[in-house]
Image (cartoon, rainbow, N blue to C red; front, side, top):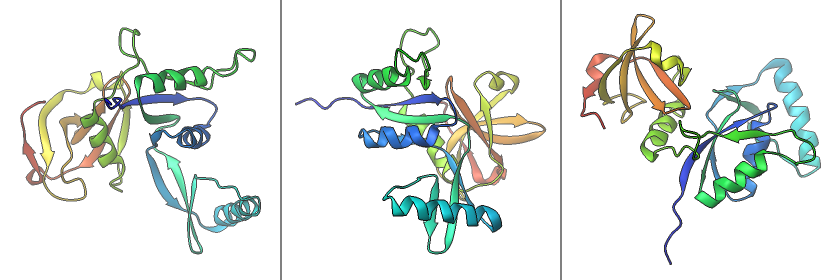
Length: 210
């Protein structure tokens, strides 16, 4: 039996419900990715989170925006507001798109799936672009900056390079000059781009444009 092709897609989720949507899609069997930074909570934030997690635990429920490691509590904070990625088949993404429209009688959509530039199809994210985006956003590096697809037109595209050393080793992208500094930029076309902080030139090697 032929295996059904799975692709990455980008979702815009409304009403600050990106974590709820992440849980819902995971419960439906879909692989998801939400770019988050992990922030350790302290003081009053820690106390309030601990109380909330205790109440949820008593009801056998979870809140996946928090990560508890012993007495330490971390909060997952989205790097790009309302942006969630999902891996699905062609039929699966149609199901998700219909779900995002919300109940017909309420006329209150919960979000949408990004479409191609001609608006005819859902925009498929190439695996390579998604792999590089995950590598960058999961690296733990500080100083990341995010740009919309429209904002990228303001920056001149430079050489295609690969990072050879450091936490971002293996990442590939374009060098762009942003506010007087050369940064490595990885783009998911039509959706978002992430730019790293400064990377020493000796840690970069020029590669053929793909």
